[in-house]
Structures are given as structure tokens and as C-alpha cells.
Image 1: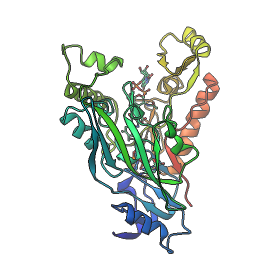
Image 2: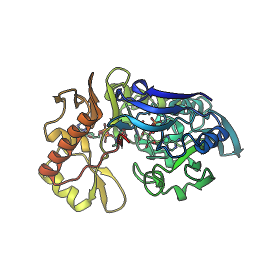
Image 3: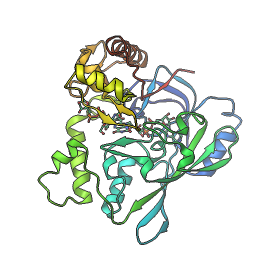
Image 4: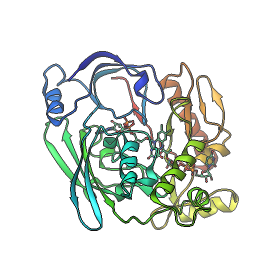
Length: 339
Ligand code: FAD
Ligand code: EPU
């Protein structure tokens, strides 16, 4: 296992922020992770777990140990006439895993095609897109407690998944290294293409296959979202706010173009992109940062942008939405302050 000192992370975070970490390592087994955590050189240092850095905003250098879990195994642990259960290493690329499943005709994750990142990060914010969330297929999550080095397994319900939320963003925030995630995939999947963009894309195909759904979603995403390799970004910068039905209806009456999305009973999810666009930020550039011209929920980093600059711009957007609509929009991106 290689341990690197003073490593630059510019190529390892999708915002392309030019920052350094004091130490970096990519252990490929549970034993290597335990060894690292127990090593006296690192024991007192802050630890940050990174997958592909596609949902992280650094506001400065990290004076600690960055661990990238590189466990890559995919193992079938169970199967019956209806499903197959897979135990997948945290370091497997998420979209490679989706392709692995759809190539075999196993359904459940196809709507989450092309989401950047690693499998180990997928339960953290319960990744979601196009009418599906990863919690629908997760059976359990294995993790190592960073301070005690003990291993634990949480069942799906113990993960307390919600919209862009889980126990890993709350009580266990920053305290775990997720090592393996187990998924149950359907052998005869019921495809979900209700989301309006997906339904429109598939309207010409009479009986879409798993592959058709994956292809449709990849094509919608390529058209709508900037590729971080070309335009630096971290996906949606904010979560979509959830408000009471009553509040949503009042807003809709005053703003007929506002689209409403389902949430828990009695609640409605509002598109934060619409709120931000109404405040005049879509396509706006300020210094080395700005809002993408096609998707108002995506903050982009131009050459030379710093995390502090992006964070200040995000706060400005948040204040504008609060002033205009009296709605608080919460950041989805994980801010890592310099330590
Ligand atoms: P990182 O950014 O490296 O980490 C994210 C958080 O998880 C951090 O807090 C980190 O400490 C923690 N973490 C990572 N790995 C582990 C681990 N093994 N154990 C414990 N904690 C860990 N998200 C969606 O939900 N839906 C989308 O449609 C979507 N589209 C996107 C499009 C683009 C262009 C981009 C850039 C991002 C998008 N995202 C989307 C956000 C992002 O892809 C997800 O949040 C993804 O799960 C992040 O994975 P990662 O490996 O890059 O995690
Ligand atoms: N809209 C605007 N202006 C825009 C973009 C969108 O007004 O610039 C409005 C439109 O009314 C549109 C609605 O917002 O119908 C929803 O837009 P879209 O389908 O693009 O989805 P989103 O709410 O902006 C969410 C997720 C994405 C996910 C897509 C598809 C969050 C925070 N974001 O975006 O996830 O890919 O739905 O399901 O929930 C991410 O989390 O990083 C991410 C990209």
C-alpha cells in the first residue's frame, strides 16, 4: 500500500480545486484500512474519506489523512428465482457497477446510470435520479468505525435513508469508512420510466428494455448536465427544498410555470433550479465561478476558482432565494474546511 505525502488533489475532485492533503492512501482491503487507522503516525490526524470527489468542496488544504477505499470485489452472495444479491467493494466505480448489472439483465439501478462516484459513497446521500433512489436496492452497508477500527453492518432500515440523506450524513457523519455495499437486483425487473424526460425519450419504443432505459438516461444526462472533465462542477449544488402542500399550492398559483414533484405525504418537492433561475442567476458568472447556463442547480468552477469563492457565491444564491421566496435551500455538496 502506497502512502503519499503532500499530495495534490486537483485531479481528484470534480470541481478541480487546487488543494493539497498532508497524507493520502488508497487501501485495497479491510486489513490495510485497519492498519492505516491504527498507525501511530496518523492516529491523531483528521481523516477524510474520498471516493471520486464528485460531491466535495474543499475550502483549503487538508492537514490530515485522505483515505480512498479501493476495494474492488463484486461477489454474488445470494440468489433465488427472482433476485440476485451482490456484495460490492466501496472502490468500484458506480457507473461501471450499473453497466455490470444492466449487461446481465439485472434491474434496479439502471435509472441511476452515469452518476459519477464510487459505490462506497452511494449510500451516504442515497443517490437518486429519474424517479429512483439507491435505497430501493440496498440490502446492507458494511463499515469500519474510524475511531475504534471495529467493523459493523447496517441493514437498509438502520441506514435511515431519506431524500439525499442517511445516517452517514447524520449520527455517523465523518465517523465511518464504508467498505462494502450489498444490493438486491431483480431478475425480471419492472422498469420505471415515469419521469417525464425519460417517458418522452422512450415514447417511440413500444417495449423498452433495461438497456433502452439506461441509454435514454445516459443521453438525457449528457444533454443536461455538464461533464466535469470539460466544465468543472459537483452536480446539483443544492438539494431541492421540501415544503408543505399548502405552501407549494400558494407558490404555484402565483407562478404557474413552477413544476411540483412528489415527496412524503402532505409535502411537495420544489425544483431549486427554478427558484435560482427566477432569482436571475442562471448562466451568470462572478469571478471564477458561476451558474451553469443549462441547469441552474449546478455551480461551475472556472480556471483559478477557489473553494472559498465558490462557497461565498453559493451563500449569495441561498440569500437571494430566501429573500425572494422565503425558502431555505440546503447545500447538497459536502464542504471540507481546511484543518
Ligand atoms: P465523494 O465526493 O468523494 O464523497 C462524498 C461524501 O461521501 C463525502 O462526505 C465523503 O467523505 C463520503 N464518502 C465517500 N466515500 C465514502 C466511504 N467509502 N465511506 C464513508 N464515507 C464516504 N448525485 C445524485 O444523487 N444524483 C445525481 O443525479 C447526481 N448527478 C451528478 C452529476 C454530476 C456531473 C456530478 C459531478 C455529481 C452528481 N451527483 C449526483 C453527486 C455525486 O455523484 C454523488 O454524491 C456520488 O455518490 C459521490 O460519489 P463520490 O465517490 O465522488 O463521493
Ligand atoms: N428547472 C429550471 N431551471 C433549470 C433547470 C431545471 O427551472 O435550469 C426546473 C424545471 O421545471 C425542471 C425541474 O427544474 O422540470 C427539474 O429539473 P431536472 O429534471 O433537471 O432535475 P433537478 O431537480 O434539477 C434533480 C437531482 C439531480 C438528478 C435529476 C434527475 C437534486 C438536488 N438534484 O435535479 O441530481 O440527476 O433530478 O432526476 O435532487 C445531483 O444530486 O447532483 C443531481 C444532479
